Length: 139
Ligand code: CMP
Image (cartoon, rainbow, N blue to C red):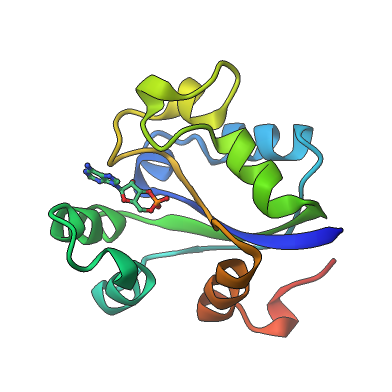
């Protein structure tokens, strides 16, 4: 089915001027970027977005990193977009990411891993709603 997923190009991607290179991989995989905005995430936004990881030892570091520079928030659309994007991103830890994936090509570490992608259709809906209104998405 045609789905939407939520993507973030993280601060390590904007810092290294890689947003176009990452978008090229996304589009080559057949995913369409139907919403996109470059923002500075506030501490409040980052804490809310990563609320499920609140008790993890890396939570503070994660919020620090996500607010350390601009990010690009995106809505991606396509056939099985949630699973497709997770495949294109590669494993969370770039050392374990498959050849050709975004993280294998670009990610620096498990924390600074270039991209975020939703892990389910339900989470995608909630994550998209946190950053986009309907009029900011055009398919
Ligand atoms: P993301 O998919 O955006 O969602 C949770 C994030 O936590 C994950 O990407 C990683 O960037 C980050 N993360 C996971 N494990 C660690 C870790 N051990 N140290 C720092 N960050 C981590």
